[in-house]
Length: 439
Image 1 (cartoon, rainbow, N blue to C red):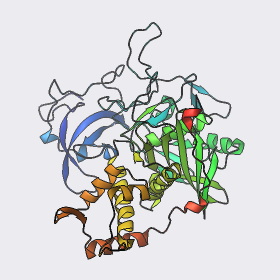
Image 2: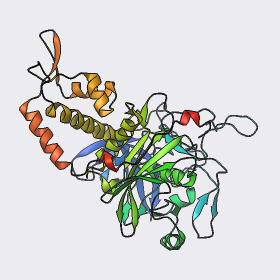
Image 3: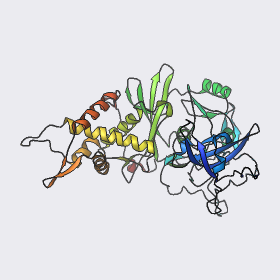
Image 4: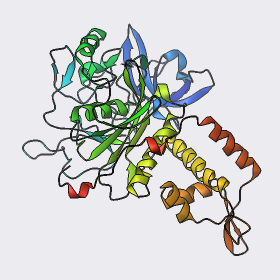
Protein backbone atom coordinates (compact mmCIF):
# COMPACT_ATOMS: atom_id res chain seq x y z
CA UNK A 1 0.00 0.00 0.00
CA UNK A 2 1.48 3.33 -1.08
CA UNK A 3 1.27 6.24 1.29
CA UNK A 4 -1.06 9.10 0.52
CA UNK A 5 -1.46 12.63 1.82
CA UNK A 6 -4.13 11.40 4.23
CA UNK A 7 -2.46 8.17 5.35
CA UNK A 8 1.26 7.32 5.54
CA UNK A 9 2.61 4.03 4.21
CA UNK A 10 2.58 1.23 6.80
CA UNK A 11 5.71 -0.90 6.41
CA UNK A 12 7.64 -3.38 8.53
CA UNK A 13 9.44 -1.59 11.35
CA UNK A 14 6.80 1.10 11.82
CA UNK A 15 5.64 1.83 15.37
CA UNK A 16 2.18 2.98 16.39
CA UNK A 17 -0.42 2.59 19.17
CA UNK A 18 -2.63 -0.53 18.89
CA UNK A 19 -5.86 -1.18 20.80
CA UNK A 20 -5.35 -4.16 23.10
CA UNK A 21 -7.52 -7.21 22.43
CA UNK A 22 -9.25 -6.95 25.80
CA UNK A 23 -10.07 -3.30 25.06
CA UNK A 24 -7.90 -2.15 27.96
CA UNK A 25 -6.46 0.93 26.28
CA UNK A 26 -3.78 1.48 23.65
CA UNK A 27 -0.22 0.17 23.66
CA UNK A 28 2.76 0.98 21.45
CA UNK A 29 3.59 -1.81 19.00
CA UNK A 30 5.99 -2.55 16.14
CA UNK A 31 4.86 -3.82 12.74
CA UNK A 32 6.68 -7.07 11.95
CA UNK A 33 4.71 -8.31 8.94
CA UNK A 34 1.82 -7.77 6.61
CA UNK A 35 -0.55 -9.97 4.61
CA UNK A 36 -3.66 -9.69 2.51
CA UNK A 37 -6.68 -11.74 3.60
CA UNK A 38 -9.67 -11.59 1.26
CA UNK A 39 -8.73 -8.10 0.12
CA UNK A 40 -8.18 -6.83 3.68
CA UNK A 41 -4.77 -5.89 5.08
CA UNK A 42 -3.65 -7.60 8.28
CA UNK A 43 -0.53 -6.56 10.21
CA UNK A 44 1.55 -8.74 12.54
CA UNK A 45 2.47 -6.61 15.55
CA UNK A 46 4.68 -6.95 18.62
CA UNK A 47 3.61 -5.00 21.72
CA UNK A 48 6.61 -3.20 23.19
CA UNK A 49 7.65 -4.47 26.65
CA UNK A 50 5.20 -7.38 26.35
CA UNK A 51 6.12 -11.04 25.89
CA UNK A 52 6.20 -12.26 22.29
CA UNK A 53 3.45 -14.80 22.97
CA UNK A 54 1.02 -11.84 22.88
CA UNK A 55 2.05 -10.91 19.31
CA UNK A 56 -0.89 -11.10 16.91
CA UNK A 57 -2.39 -10.16 13.54
CA UNK A 58 -4.55 -7.02 13.71
CA UNK A 59 -6.64 -4.99 11.29
CA UNK A 60 -6.20 -1.29 10.61
CA UNK A 61 -9.31 -0.59 12.73
CA UNK A 62 -7.28 -1.40 15.87
CA UNK A 63 -4.36 0.83 14.85
CA UNK A 64 -3.99 4.57 15.56
CA UNK A 65 -2.44 5.36 12.17
CA UNK A 66 -2.39 9.10 12.91
CA UNK A 67 0.40 8.44 15.45
CA UNK A 68 2.44 6.17 13.16
CA UNK A 69 6.23 6.47 13.53
CA UNK A 70 8.26 5.48 10.48
CA UNK A 71 11.33 3.30 11.10
CA UNK A 72 14.74 4.96 11.00
CA UNK A 73 17.10 3.71 8.33
CA UNK A 74 19.47 2.29 10.96
CA UNK A 75 16.76 0.46 12.94
CA UNK A 76 14.69 -0.74 9.99
CA UNK A 77 13.47 -4.30 10.49
CA UNK A 78 15.27 -6.62 8.05
CA UNK A 79 13.09 -8.16 5.38
CA UNK A 80 13.17 -11.84 4.59
CA UNK A 81 15.30 -12.79 1.62
CA UNK A 82 13.27 -13.90 -1.33
CA UNK A 83 10.07 -12.12 -0.28
CA UNK A 84 8.95 -9.56 -2.82
CA UNK A 85 7.21 -6.38 -1.83
CA UNK A 86 3.46 -6.68 -1.87
CA UNK A 87 3.46 -10.41 -1.12
CA UNK A 88 2.34 -11.96 2.14
CA UNK A 89 5.00 -11.50 4.81
CA UNK A 90 3.76 -14.24 7.14
CA UNK A 91 6.78 -16.32 8.11
CA UNK A 92 7.18 -19.95 7.29
CA UNK A 93 9.77 -22.43 8.39
CA UNK A 94 13.34 -22.37 7.13
CA UNK A 95 13.40 -24.16 3.79
CA UNK A 96 13.30 -27.92 4.05
CA UNK A 97 12.36 -30.41 1.39
CA UNK A 98 9.02 -32.02 2.19
CA UNK A 99 7.98 -35.44 0.95
CA UNK A 100 4.69 -37.28 1.33
CA UNK A 101 4.73 -40.40 3.42
CA UNK A 102 2.45 -43.38 2.72
CA UNK A 103 -0.14 -42.20 5.24
CA UNK A 104 -0.35 -38.78 3.64
CA UNK A 105 1.56 -36.89 6.32
CA UNK A 106 4.22 -34.32 5.59
CA UNK A 107 7.73 -35.23 6.63
CA UNK A 108 10.86 -33.06 6.25
CA UNK A 109 13.88 -34.74 4.74
CA UNK A 110 16.80 -33.71 6.91
CA UNK A 111 19.15 -36.65 6.47
CA UNK A 112 20.37 -38.07 9.75
CA UNK A 113 20.30 -34.79 11.62
CA UNK A 114 18.61 -34.63 15.00
CA UNK A 115 17.67 -31.82 17.30
CA UNK A 116 17.28 -31.27 20.99
CA UNK A 117 16.57 -28.55 23.48
CA UNK A 118 19.53 -26.78 25.03
CA UNK A 119 20.68 -23.26 25.68
CA UNK A 120 24.30 -23.92 24.76
CA UNK A 121 25.92 -24.93 21.52
CA UNK A 122 27.57 -28.33 21.42
CA UNK A 123 30.82 -29.02 19.65
CA UNK A 124 30.31 -30.03 16.07
CA UNK A 125 26.85 -28.53 15.90
CA UNK A 126 27.84 -25.77 13.44
CA UNK A 127 25.92 -26.23 10.20
CA UNK A 128 26.74 -22.77 8.86
CA UNK A 129 28.97 -23.85 5.96
CA UNK A 130 28.18 -24.90 2.42
CA UNK A 131 29.61 -28.13 1.05
CA UNK A 132 32.45 -26.14 -0.47
CA UNK A 133 33.32 -24.70 2.95
CA UNK A 134 31.88 -21.23 2.34
CA UNK A 135 29.79 -19.63 5.08
CA UNK A 136 26.00 -19.44 4.78
CA UNK A 137 23.21 -18.38 7.14
CA UNK A 138 22.00 -21.10 9.47
CA UNK A 139 18.50 -21.65 8.08
CA UNK A 140 17.95 -25.33 7.35
CA UNK A 141 15.94 -26.42 10.34
CA UNK A 142 18.60 -26.01 12.99
CA UNK A 143 15.97 -24.38 15.25
CA UNK A 144 18.45 -21.73 16.36
CA UNK A 145 16.45 -18.87 17.80
CA UNK A 146 17.69 -15.77 15.96
CA UNK A 147 15.89 -13.06 17.90
CA UNK A 148 16.81 -10.42 15.31
CA UNK A 149 15.50 -12.53 12.41
CA UNK A 150 12.14 -11.46 10.99
CA UNK A 151 11.35 -15.13 10.25
CA UNK A 152 11.74 -16.50 13.78
CA UNK A 153 10.22 -13.40 15.39
CA UNK A 154 6.80 -14.28 13.99
CA UNK A 155 4.57 -17.23 14.82
CA UNK A 156 4.32 -19.51 11.82
CA UNK A 157 1.77 -22.08 13.02
CA UNK A 158 -1.76 -20.78 13.55
CA UNK A 159 -3.24 -23.69 15.51
CA UNK A 160 -2.41 -27.26 16.56
CA UNK A 161 -4.71 -30.11 17.49
CA UNK A 162 -3.26 -32.42 20.13
CA UNK A 163 -5.65 -35.07 21.42
CA UNK A 164 -8.88 -33.37 22.47
CA UNK A 165 -7.29 -29.91 22.62
CA UNK A 166 -6.86 -27.20 20.03
CA UNK A 167 -4.07 -24.87 21.11
CA UNK A 168 -2.85 -21.56 19.70
CA UNK A 169 0.98 -21.57 19.64
CA UNK A 170 2.93 -18.78 21.29
CA UNK A 171 6.14 -18.73 19.27
CA UNK A 172 7.88 -19.80 16.07
CA UNK A 173 8.81 -23.45 15.57
CA UNK A 174 10.40 -24.79 12.37
CA UNK A 175 7.74 -27.24 11.29
CA UNK A 176 7.91 -28.06 7.55
CA UNK A 177 6.97 -25.11 5.39
CA UNK A 178 4.13 -27.08 3.79
CA UNK A 179 2.34 -27.22 7.15
CA UNK A 180 2.67 -23.56 8.09
CA UNK A 181 0.18 -22.48 5.43
CA UNK A 182 -2.53 -24.68 6.98
CA UNK A 183 -5.08 -23.40 9.49
CA UNK A 184 -4.43 -26.40 11.78
CA UNK A 185 -1.46 -28.75 12.23
CA UNK A 186 -2.62 -32.13 13.57
CA UNK A 187 -0.36 -33.94 16.04
CA UNK A 188 -0.67 -37.50 17.34
CA UNK A 189 -0.82 -37.17 21.13
CA UNK A 190 1.06 -40.46 21.64
CA UNK A 191 4.01 -40.40 19.19
CA UNK A 192 3.80 -36.61 18.53
CA UNK A 193 4.01 -37.11 14.75
CA UNK A 194 2.59 -34.15 12.83
CA UNK A 195 0.29 -34.49 9.80
CA UNK A 196 -1.50 -32.09 7.52
CA UNK A 197 -5.17 -33.04 7.87
CA UNK A 198 -7.74 -34.65 10.16
CA UNK A 199 -8.09 -37.55 7.71
CA UNK A 200 -4.32 -38.15 7.78
CA UNK A 201 -4.41 -38.12 11.57
CA UNK A 202 -7.26 -40.65 11.68
CA UNK A 203 -5.35 -42.98 9.35
CA UNK A 204 -2.19 -42.54 11.40
CA UNK A 205 -3.93 -43.30 14.71
CA UNK A 206 -5.21 -46.59 13.26
CA UNK A 207 -1.60 -47.61 12.55
CA UNK A 208 0.16 -45.96 15.52
CA UNK A 209 1.18 -48.63 18.02
CA UNK A 210 2.00 -46.22 20.84
CA UNK A 211 -0.41 -45.41 23.65
CA UNK A 212 2.32 -44.04 25.91
CA UNK A 213 5.74 -42.37 25.40
CA UNK A 214 8.40 -44.77 24.04
CA UNK A 215 10.50 -45.08 27.19
CA UNK A 216 10.61 -46.58 30.66
CA UNK A 217 7.79 -45.75 33.06
CA UNK A 218 9.73 -44.78 36.18
CA UNK A 219 6.93 -43.31 38.28
CA UNK A 220 3.23 -43.96 38.73
CA UNK A 221 0.82 -42.79 41.38
CA UNK A 222 -2.89 -42.53 40.73
CA UNK A 223 -3.33 -41.41 37.13
CA UNK A 224 0.02 -39.59 36.95
CA UNK A 225 3.01 -41.31 35.31
CA UNK A 226 6.51 -40.24 34.30
CA UNK A 227 8.40 -41.81 31.42
CA UNK A 228 12.16 -41.54 30.82
CA UNK A 229 13.06 -41.28 27.13
CA UNK A 230 16.65 -41.56 25.91
CA UNK A 231 17.31 -39.02 23.15
CA UNK A 232 19.65 -41.47 21.41
CA UNK A 233 17.35 -44.50 21.46
CA UNK A 234 14.14 -42.63 20.58
CA UNK A 235 15.29 -39.90 18.21
CA UNK A 236 12.05 -39.46 16.26
CA UNK A 237 9.96 -38.98 19.41
CA UNK A 238 12.56 -36.62 20.94
CA UNK A 239 12.65 -34.54 17.74
CA UNK A 240 8.88 -34.27 17.59
CA UNK A 241 8.76 -33.35 21.29
CA UNK A 242 11.27 -30.55 20.73
CA UNK A 243 9.29 -29.21 17.77
CA UNK A 244 6.11 -29.20 19.85
CA UNK A 245 7.85 -27.58 22.83
CA UNK A 246 9.35 -24.82 20.68
CA UNK A 247 5.83 -23.58 19.95
CA UNK A 248 5.64 -22.54 23.62
CA UNK A 249 9.30 -21.83 24.49
CA UNK A 250 11.05 -18.75 23.18
CA UNK A 251 14.05 -18.43 25.48
CA UNK A 252 15.84 -21.65 24.53
CA UNK A 253 17.84 -22.59 21.46
CA UNK A 254 17.12 -25.96 19.87
CA UNK A 255 19.67 -28.15 18.11
CA UNK A 256 19.49 -31.32 16.08
CA UNK A 257 21.48 -33.56 18.41
CA UNK A 258 19.18 -35.29 20.91
CA UNK A 259 21.74 -37.95 21.88
CA UNK A 260 23.13 -36.14 24.98
CA UNK A 261 19.67 -35.61 26.50
CA UNK A 262 17.13 -37.49 28.58
CA UNK A 263 13.48 -36.48 28.39
CA UNK A 264 11.06 -36.97 31.28
CA UNK A 265 7.46 -36.86 30.07
CA UNK A 266 4.58 -36.52 32.53
CA UNK A 267 1.29 -38.09 31.48
CA UNK A 268 -2.27 -38.42 32.69
CA UNK A 269 -3.66 -41.93 32.25
CA UNK A 270 -7.18 -42.95 31.24
CA UNK A 271 -8.78 -45.85 29.40
CA UNK A 272 -7.49 -44.56 26.04
CA UNK A 273 -3.83 -44.29 27.03
CA UNK A 274 -1.26 -41.93 28.53
CA UNK A 275 -1.79 -38.31 27.52
CA UNK A 276 1.15 -35.87 27.62
CA UNK A 277 0.80 -33.06 30.16
CA UNK A 278 4.33 -31.66 30.16
CA UNK A 279 7.98 -32.62 30.17
CA UNK A 280 11.49 -31.58 31.08
CA UNK A 281 14.80 -32.52 29.53
CA UNK A 282 18.22 -32.78 31.11
CA UNK A 283 21.72 -33.47 29.90
CA UNK A 284 23.11 -36.91 30.62
CA UNK A 285 26.31 -35.21 31.73
CA UNK A 286 26.12 -31.62 32.96
CA UNK A 287 29.37 -29.94 33.93
CA UNK A 288 27.42 -27.20 35.73
CA UNK A 289 25.06 -29.50 37.70
CA UNK A 290 21.98 -28.48 35.76
CA UNK A 291 19.12 -30.85 36.49
CA UNK A 292 16.79 -29.33 33.87
CA UNK A 293 17.56 -28.07 30.36
CA UNK A 294 14.03 -27.27 29.15
CA UNK A 295 10.76 -27.56 31.04
CA UNK A 296 7.22 -27.08 29.79
CA UNK A 297 3.66 -27.63 30.94
CA UNK A 298 1.38 -27.59 27.90
CA UNK A 299 -1.10 -24.65 27.97
CA UNK A 300 -4.28 -26.73 28.64
CA UNK A 301 -2.70 -28.02 31.86
CA UNK A 302 -1.20 -24.79 33.19
CA UNK A 303 -2.34 -23.22 36.47
CA UNK A 304 -3.27 -26.67 37.79
CA UNK A 305 -0.12 -27.46 39.80
CA UNK A 306 1.55 -29.60 37.11
CA UNK A 307 4.45 -27.16 36.71
CA UNK A 308 5.44 -27.57 40.36
CA UNK A 309 5.00 -31.33 40.01
CA UNK A 310 7.52 -31.37 37.13
CA UNK A 311 9.97 -29.27 39.15
CA UNK A 312 9.48 -31.43 42.25
CA UNK A 313 10.16 -34.56 40.18
CA UNK A 314 13.39 -33.09 38.78
CA UNK A 315 14.66 -32.48 42.31
CA UNK A 316 13.59 -35.97 43.39
CA UNK A 317 15.88 -37.34 40.67
CA UNK A 318 18.67 -35.09 41.97
CA UNK A 319 18.15 -36.53 45.47
CA UNK A 320 18.55 -40.05 44.04
CA UNK A 321 21.78 -38.91 42.38
CA UNK A 322 23.02 -37.42 45.66
CA UNK A 323 23.49 -34.03 43.99
CA UNK A 324 22.18 -30.52 44.18
CA UNK A 325 20.77 -29.15 40.95
CA UNK A 326 19.51 -26.03 39.25
CA UNK A 327 17.65 -25.31 35.99
CA UNK A 328 19.54 -24.03 32.97
CA UNK A 329 19.43 -20.30 32.50
CA UNK A 330 17.85 -18.21 31.17
CA UNK A 331 14.44 -19.09 32.56
CA UNK A 332 11.35 -17.77 30.84
CA UNK A 333 9.15 -15.32 32.71
CA UNK A 334 6.67 -18.09 33.54
CA UNK A 335 9.50 -20.51 34.34
CA UNK A 336 11.06 -18.08 36.80
CA UNK A 337 7.73 -17.58 38.55
CA UNK A 338 7.20 -21.35 38.83
CA UNK A 339 10.70 -22.03 40.17
CA UNK A 340 10.63 -19.14 42.60
CA UNK A 341 7.27 -20.33 43.92
CA UNK A 342 8.53 -23.94 44.24
CA UNK A 343 11.77 -22.90 45.98
CA UNK A 344 9.85 -20.62 48.38
CA UNK A 345 7.28 -23.24 49.33
CA UNK A 346 9.87 -26.02 49.68
CA UNK A 347 12.20 -23.96 51.90
CA UNK A 348 9.37 -22.52 54.01
CA UNK A 349 7.96 -26.02 54.51
CA UNK A 350 11.27 -27.04 56.12
CA UNK A 351 11.63 -23.90 58.23
CA UNK A 352 8.08 -24.01 59.60
CA UNK A 353 8.28 -27.68 60.62
CA UNK A 354 11.67 -27.37 62.35
CA UNK A 355 11.93 -27.87 66.11
CA UNK A 356 14.59 -26.43 68.46
CA UNK A 357 17.67 -28.60 68.87
CA UNK A 358 18.90 -29.65 72.29
CA UNK A 359 20.35 -26.73 74.24
CA UNK A 360 18.85 -24.09 71.92
CA UNK A 361 15.77 -21.93 72.35
CA UNK A 362 15.27 -21.73 68.59
CA UNK A 363 15.81 -24.12 65.68
CA UNK A 364 19.27 -23.93 64.08
CA UNK A 365 19.83 -24.59 60.37
CA UNK A 366 22.45 -23.67 57.78
CA UNK A 367 22.21 -22.92 54.07
CA UNK A 368 24.07 -26.18 53.44
CA UNK A 369 21.50 -28.08 55.50
CA UNK A 370 18.62 -26.69 53.42
CA UNK A 371 20.50 -27.44 50.19
CA UNK A 372 21.21 -31.04 51.19
CA UNK A 373 17.62 -31.68 52.35
CA UNK A 374 16.04 -30.29 49.17
CA UNK A 375 18.78 -30.79 46.51
CA UNK A 376 18.27 -27.11 45.64
CA UNK A 377 21.60 -25.47 44.84
CA UNK A 378 22.98 -23.14 47.52
CA UNK A 379 22.83 -20.10 45.23
CA UNK A 380 19.11 -20.71 44.64
CA UNK A 381 18.48 -21.17 48.38
CA UNK A 382 20.20 -17.86 49.17
CA UNK A 383 18.42 -15.95 46.38
CA UNK A 384 15.05 -17.34 47.57
CA UNK A 385 15.65 -16.35 51.20
CA UNK A 386 16.64 -12.88 50.01
CA UNK A 387 13.58 -12.65 47.75
CA UNK A 388 11.37 -13.52 50.72
CA UNK A 389 13.23 -11.01 52.94
CA UNK A 390 13.77 -13.71 55.56
CA UNK A 391 17.45 -13.08 56.34
CA UNK A 392 18.22 -10.51 59.01
CA UNK A 393 21.44 -9.55 60.83
CA UNK A 394 20.94 -9.63 64.58
CA UNK A 395 23.56 -9.43 67.38
CA UNK A 396 26.45 -10.43 65.17
CA UNK A 397 24.78 -13.30 63.37
CA UNK A 398 22.37 -13.95 60.53
CA UNK A 399 18.92 -15.12 61.57
CA UNK A 400 15.81 -16.16 59.64
CA UNK A 401 12.64 -14.40 60.73
CA UNK A 402 9.18 -15.70 59.77
CA UNK A 403 6.08 -13.57 60.27
CA UNK A 404 2.66 -15.02 61.10
CA UNK A 405 1.42 -13.67 57.78
CA UNK A 406 4.10 -15.60 55.88
CA UNK A 407 3.27 -18.78 57.77
CA UNK A 408 -0.46 -18.38 57.02
CA UNK A 409 0.25 -17.74 53.33
CA UNK A 410 2.49 -20.80 53.18
CA UNK A 411 -0.10 -23.04 54.84
CA UNK A 412 -2.80 -21.91 52.42
CA UNK A 413 -0.49 -22.48 49.45
CA UNK A 414 0.39 -26.01 50.58
CA UNK A 415 -3.30 -26.85 51.03
CA UNK A 416 -3.81 -26.10 47.33
CA UNK A 417 -1.05 -28.53 46.28
CA UNK A 418 -3.25 -31.59 46.11
CA UNK A 419 -0.80 -33.67 44.07
CA UNK A 420 2.76 -34.23 45.30
CA UNK A 421 5.58 -36.53 44.23
CA UNK A 422 5.73 -39.66 46.38
CA UNK A 423 9.39 -40.86 46.53
CA UNK A 424 8.20 -44.41 47.26
CA UNK A 425 6.55 -44.55 43.81
CA UNK A 426 9.78 -43.65 41.98
CA UNK A 427 11.58 -46.68 40.55
CA UNK A 428 14.79 -45.32 39.06
CA UNK A 429 18.52 -45.78 39.37
CA UNK A 430 20.91 -43.04 38.21
CA UNK A 431 23.40 -44.02 35.52
CA UNK A 432 27.04 -42.97 35.35
CA UNK A 433 27.10 -41.71 31.77
CA UNK A 434 30.80 -40.80 31.96
CA UNK A 435 31.64 -44.53 31.93
CA UNK A 436 29.45 -45.30 28.97
CA UNK A 437 31.61 -43.78 26.24
CA UNK A 438 29.17 -42.60 23.62
CA UNK A 439 25.65 -42.32 25.05
